[in-house]
Figure (tube, rainbow, N blue to C red):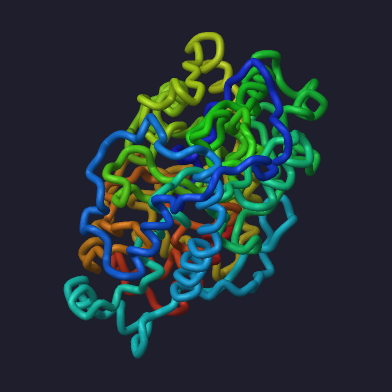
Length: 491
């Protein structure tokens, strides 16, 4: 199930800079040279004619350091191609999912948005969930019946990758900081009702009596001192300032190799992890090559990161300090430190900067869970349906074999072996091979963090239950699935 405190998403994670704020709002360059067809446009045309190379074309490990085209050429070509790529990706989503707005009567922790309900993954024709559950993985694979929405979800522009922010975050940072997070080559893909509430509440382990300390605002470099004065120590305050400071990143920087119209200082950690939570910003994992094999990573919450013993979906780093430092060196630049210096690499000082950032991250708490006791078991406020769901969670559904303990995680990495169910194929420039072992993420506060799984392929908790029922072959009944979903909303 989806993680609440992953880390690639600290792919906004290390904003360090002496200056704060941004450049002007994005406007197209005033002088443009004649447009040339970008590589991505060529890929799209080729994709329409014939399947791409089975291994994604290039086997290169490194990104190009010298860009052969001028920025104006790239800007013109990518801007013109953007509608084609957006349309292609939206068509894929509509083929895979029901994207309609169907809120439940359960609210997220900030009481600003309802949790969406219902299974949204579309089934292949002439098959039911019950029929699929009775089939073996080999039979599903042979008959190509694995639901497309259960296959890996590609980036909206996979051949390029990089961070893509939702419109809510783009608009707020533009309004408050005059800094631009809008790309000229691709757009955020899911509708707003399928993403976390915005702005999300912020809870602190050091001040639990205060509840949400954000005051309903997005915490930024412009307002953090006003909001947090008297609530944080000087060390925590400086850590927060660093987490809110923009720093150059692969697609957001001041060079010609960027995907924003005007030069920018970059992005901050909390651009993705809004108020220490998540806004569903996505990008590609930095740890895989070639490009076609890289998989989408959905930004996760930093809530409860103090409870984690390993950090990084696949890297198994042993402290938040290690992760913070490692992220700045590689993931901020798509896993390629060779090009980082060109764009503005800054190695944070372990003692004076990294440790302070970690101090702040380590006091971001889980949201309140009024139906859980001190051992994270249901108390007397729970309904009978929720109690049945809890019994399934620790029994037939086998959830607790990975999601154990008070924080519902076992500090291990597991391979679901989803490749048992389908043959990989090229989908919008992504070779959708299985990703291998992924760390177990916490389920505390899971209702606040759609979409689910590491790449956001599961839109609701109902989708998530169906996915694991099929992959783990637990054969839950329709009623048992509903009970388990009800329990998950209590966490």
